[in-house]
Length: 386
Image 1 (cartoon, one colour):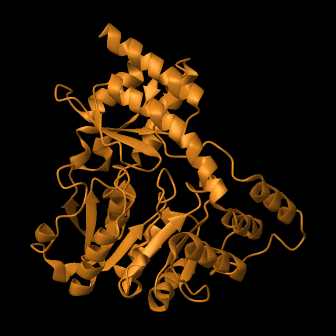
Image 2 (tube, one colour):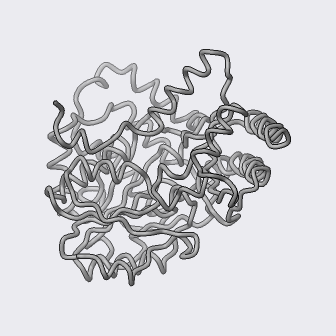
């Protein structure tokens, strides 16, 4: 029998669904995927060239430091200064990661004992919940709703047994809803964490996508005392498969997380770290080019939503479009499955992000305009025939 913690989690939804889609494609279905938030364009050519050049050097293939190259930490520090106007000490306030998912696990293990409470957003990234279950934490969800503008209800939070809670996961700009960050919200979160001695973890990989004002929770004075922020090059620099991320906080929190991390992995590949340094040097023109592509795709996604009779907030940012399904639709899963099996287009049903997502669907912008237009045409044909 497996450990109890294994029985507390299910296989990741996308892992299961992609297997099904692979079988459908093997039978000639030609599914267009608008489900996964994995950028389909390459990183900057200088980033790729750096990887190739560094990989050919004879001294590039050994074990690396658990804290990453000093130059990488400094590059992250300079990136935060240029684009977020946040000062981070590269020596002791930044920890490179093998992607944000790794950081979610390491942070949870560093702060949460079995039975401790963790605050989780509903809807929210499913990994926050599954990792908390693997750590045998006690789960407390907090509601995010369209009526509350996808922000926490702090009066409702005050009614929870906050003395038991160690961590609160937040994610702004928010996935899946696209709700943007604001200094007012970050101030409330920092004040809440300080008042109740709860560590606030902001997962921040979407701040450059269709968002002209990137914010960090560290824009709030004193936030480092109680907050951790994770960031990633997956979305902002088209590097999802590279697994290059980071977290930042005060030196004490960084050391606690490093104790966990150093017992689990053996550092990152040196050429990838060198290439990440090159990626982080890119100026505003890089982000403008990335967003010009997503802007065009977003218009097609909006037309898909309109075709399906879904309502969406045009102010949302990020790699997705989040929309409320029509009242006469049975559920997000039923709608998504109908589109998958009858229009051969994969979109994400919102229920996988929590019960508050059940009346919503999510469309990824990580497909070419050609593919998205084809998906739109297939869906139009389906709607017209039903």
